Length: 337
Ligand code: PBG
Image (cartoon, rainbow, N blue to C red):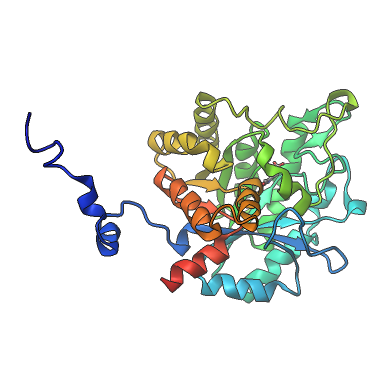
């Protein structure tokens, strides 16, 4: 047997001897510019706290300067915005999404006025605005794909007009990227990018987010309460389908794609990254965030280490950037080192 290439000639622990050495041979790094902070926006009369998401709150437009300033100082390049819409504004077709004075549009304008250098990513989907909690238009029996497309394209225009830099459709209707690209280009918004949630799974990890945006409990087919989005979001068991989803979105004009949730779907991130040469984002979703917070609150895991390990794993798998509710705390910690 050869001495080299085998123990004892080869000892992997040699390169793990010192802090500086481990640092020197580190393959992947997390940087504040990798992080995107999602923010929830509310009216002054709506509650700020989100019980299922410790450390996350809803912000009024007047309160935004506090958090935006910290975000810029931490070196975070962009934020994502989600509204907490009052119940009385919710309808079956989610018309409030098209109101140029809705919470999101007001927030976009306020932030752009304050800090034009901060990127704004606007989520496109109807669930924060619908009386049934679905991402598309409910016709009484099912989510009508093609009727929803029209609504989503208009929602994109309203957000682009308010100043959103990146339009991020999270609705999972077929054909929405093409419909949005066409609408944007026809209205002189050819410079606005599309980040499509290409592989978005029907996940149990979205629970806390639905509380955060006050989404209504989901009705099912024939009015049966099934409470899921399985007719449009992907089956967690499928990987090949994620490649088909990404391919179609890119063909329709997506500039970047997203995989969501994050940590349970590292294989999907890696395969999309290897198959297509476009930026790939991951969303560490609310349930992933809250699990870490909850376990840490019990003293069962180290909160910051667990959070950073999750995020570096997403980078190692091939992500270009990560949406995380912990963006600010993680970026601040990275800056202090
Ligand atoms: C809905 C949307 C969801 C999230 C982002 N956009 C929830 C859903 O699909 O029900 C989830 C984000 C999270 O859980 O943090 N368009």
